[in-house]
Length: 177
Image (tube, rainbow, N blue to C red):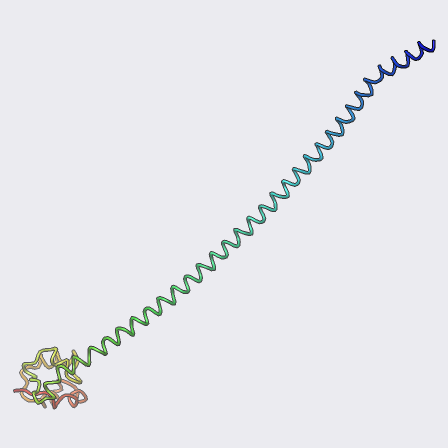
């Protein structure tokens, strides 16, 4: 009987073993499912956090890029304006110096014969020759040409063809031959 009892215990134990294994497997499966769920949840939350941080960094970089671009555009505009102003000033200065360099030479070249003894004839001189005389600009040269023939140098003043302040500057350099 002991043998039979032992056999029953062993048989019963063996019969119970699959149940215990089944319970252990189910318990392990539940734990595995719970761990998998936790890992998935943590992964999802981590992914969300990474996505948020990535979005924030991207936004910051974009903002910084826009700000840098705006600053660059403003600086470029400012430098361009300064260069344009300096170029305009340099051009004006260059033109003025060129005119100053050319004008005295024109007047000196035309007045040279007058200073050497040969006077400019008011009745035959070209407009350019008249303009080259001191005190006679374009307007006075045109008035003299319109008033031809001129009988005497003094007629320029007495007939008010040119103003006295101009007449005094060139009267010794002209004639009416």
